[in-house]
Image 1 (cartoon, one colour):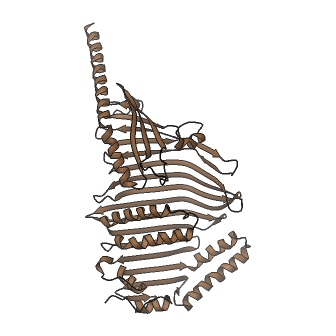
Image 2 (cartoon, one colour):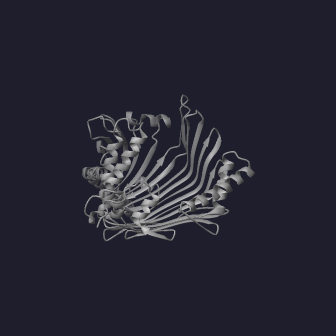
Image 3 (cartoon, helix red, strand yellow):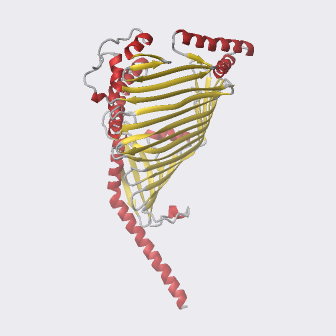
Length: 499
């Protein structure tokens, strides 16, 4: 009997302790809410300064074991120039908050790690997102469960509902079986990890000829583990994998890509950023013809971290201003000219510290052989060269320190590629083969005639090296001025050379 009383007393004591701890945690969370929102708005302004959005909360109702609140995202600008949300519009997340130290929502998943809270979030049906609710029969398109640690770090599991939207008038259709997104971040948002899985996505529209166009993606997976450098540049490891991408027109396959893989790995050492970009497609099919596989391996090194941050900020801000110009969407020539101008005006900032880029290699391979392109470029810091360049020659001298490039086109591989092009265009097999032979042999002959290429065994080869104003083109040495005069007719070359 005494043992029973002791057991009951222990259970009651634990219940009191749990209730007290849950109440205290809920109060602590409420007291920290303003700070959490301030951090969120600071990060939003840092990563998307032109979004003109702000985050706030309303209707906080604290209970013993759980609380409720509404997280509100709305425009911070009172003008109509906000492309995301107009003044008066808002996106609201209904939040159900289970208090720690052992939130009930986490216990249901057998997660026994002490936490400040577990938050379940769902979209509210507001004017800004009402079309999303039409896609899901008035259900929240997304719902998320977030564990908030006592340090302020968060782990979020976000789920996207399956949707199937059809527009009977335009023939457009968007369908997906949903997906998942797992995100973890530290209390400052510096360290960030991402894992996403979307099994399928299909989009149907019509082209200019009124034919139905179907675009599908299967097996899309994203992964990332990144952090901010002291300068504010995000580095780390990221990857994307896609099982299949297909585009069809009027029921006929136009383009199919199998097993696309991409990876990004960058780090920061003593204020210098460097890393690798790797992309690969195992199979490229055009109109059911196999065009082989492609790969790109690129390395970047010695990029000044402060310069990268400055370049990114300026480029993004200027692009935002460019895209906000009226009528630009309907004028692609003006848009491209604007993009080029922004890039060129900010390029000197990016080249601070004399970085380098290498491609080793860009390759295309089929059953008959492989063609490759390799490149290594070392740049000057434009700020170390005085005076403004007046000619293209002076511009090259200003930014380029050394260059080493080599293109190798395997003739059997190129002939097979052009043969497949002919088949895709409707030629008979024999005619497509004859045409392919003529095209590749013609390319080799024309390249040699203009001294652009050499033929080595079964390869069409071009090599180019540059250093200290001297150029070596396929073994033919010349000055930069002679090279530009020979291969870039009409370009001003005789003035503006730095002494």
